[in-house]
Image 1 (cartoon, rainbow, N blue to C red):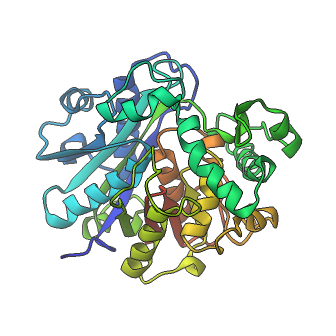
Image 2: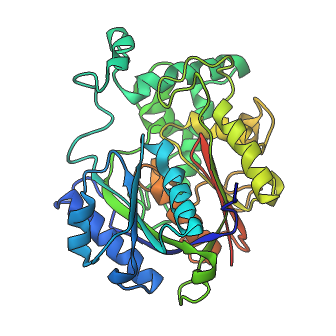
Length: 381
């Protein structure tokens, strides 16, 4: 099987502002972000011949083509699920340009998640028959669903909600110096975190939960060879992997043996390090998908930055802050910047290797973008 490692690059990125009420359609958000990404890449609409988004995205490919002026598409695909699909879009794009199925692939994700349909609110009806196993027990919001796994992690290593709050404080600290972030200039203290209301006691407080955001992000992927001919600064895709295990589940992940470990993350990390020839010590910055603060702890351990149960001390010792051993989510992440299904984390990774981030980590050469059950390393050109 031909590897996609070092065979593709992100050459363009774009976004809208991040808000709680965009005042425009999701298609318009997608078009604005996509137009910006294409311009950043230095490409014309006619240069785009591939399109990828999420199954959940409401913007129709043909309508977006018309809005952007793209005359013809020869490849398109969609990735299932929410944040678990963030890196999957990059994997599909890298495979497309490496195989020759497309030359330049546009990826986008856009929604009015706060002013429109709010993902964090209770499900009014089961989206699929499988939900019937969970809704009768009150598992009708993401916070309740994921909290069961997080509680096992807490119990195994003796954590409290205040330990999780230490990550939330760092995320908001980083967001406070990022002008793109919704929580720009609004840091919090651990006391603020502990005063926020319970969402799922004793596991998650309000300030452990990601935002509900309106906005759009987009990026353009092409082959490493073609990237060298463009005027933009490429972010090399050193490696990108997904990991989905038998008996696993994206939301109701209750069927694996050890709930104190993120098994899919451990599997993805093993494959990613083998594919790239890199390891945790080679990573300068990490952006982690964090719908809830505890998942950062489990990914730090899953990717091998610290041992099992050691993330609490790793964070408390300042390692994930700017200037620390591994700066995590320098843009503020999904808690501090915005929640665009983790795709804004990819944009931050590109900016870090380009050297253009708001909170730039000096000399960043390798950035890990972790989506829980998947991972990607972006490298400088």
